Length: 230
View (cartoon, rainbow, N blue to C red):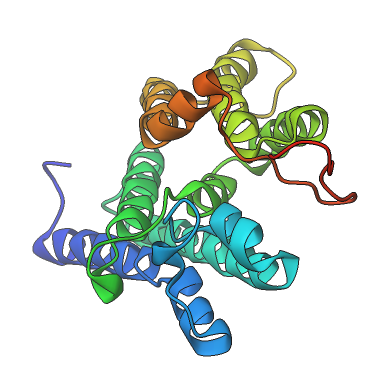
């Protein structure tokens, strides 16, 4: 890093700013206002994200929000990866910069400059961004998420469980000889634990509702039971 030129520093800072700006695109807010005439942050859990869109406006509104949030994270990290063409930036630093790109994109989603710094929890953006680094690990986490969601119908519980499995999967892949990812750096392992902690922190209200039995369930393929209020 000490040998970086002024141009390299400039490119790194610019890439991270662009990652934040990409993360700041408030797809849930814009889609809610443009096509449904509501500010999603004033309804449901008041979060500008896929889950609240699904809960308040249904699948037709939630699917494009998830796709846009996923790809803005993926694009942000992929764009940062272009720095590998700079001879001053080592392969180890590429991973570190991608990690910074993840944080920049998720920070943009949580505190979007285009929506008065009031956004969502950044799960879809986080998933998209990490997919841009190690996609296979993310796919396993998605499998965990899907299983928990199918058995519980709690999106928040599924997200937290998958997030907590993420560090364990990273360590497993980094210590397994046959894994294609056994070159995972210590920085990325620390990053995985930070991400798990961040997910728990952003879902702290959901945790309280889960404890109190007041967390809303979401049913995708069947209607909610009529004999009790979910």
